[in-house]
Length: 252
Image (cartoon, rainbow, N blue to C red; front, side, top):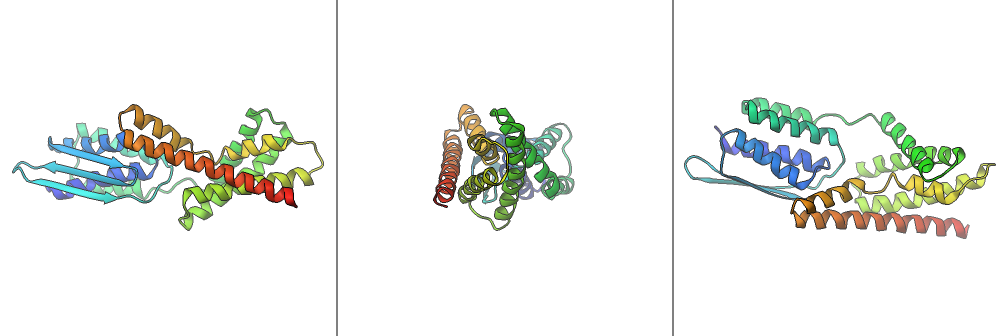
């Protein structure tokens, strides 16, 4: 067994989960399961939101370690589920390393949902949240169109690798500006506050906040605090952007 290749593949599996929005404890558990599946009993992993550290001791007593930096961060829970499922299958039926590498590459290269589908879901989310917060059909319809613009902004800014906090500052400002414009030009009575709240829900860092709580409950306080701070800063960014947008439109 090529343990150096094995530790790289296990780290790659953890990287896919970490980059796709998985919890820290899930990344560590997956790496350990993969290594244990190939009769590596002395294996350790330590994961932070920006890095993975893995070590193992082979049959000769030699220690092999690997440190991998992770900078990309998206939300693709399907990839998390696929890698999770693969690690559990390996516990029962270990695959040859070539086959394991092929499966991990398939998962990593898996295309996300189409842009049209993402825009549709963003529109429906804005529509639904505005209804949930007590908006009328007109309010929800305005949020439907704003949801499309918000998702387009997210897609464009992520392509140029803009920081998530700045994305949400711009997103908050965009929502406030568009809501103000729409409510002024349409000839129907609308509730501006409800539309803004419903539309901004598309920017709320739900995954980061949930992962922060789950990591803290699992005893991983470093990652829990890190994720909680990330969610807090993103929320502050949304508030700053929305406030700036309202102040700008108020000036006009």
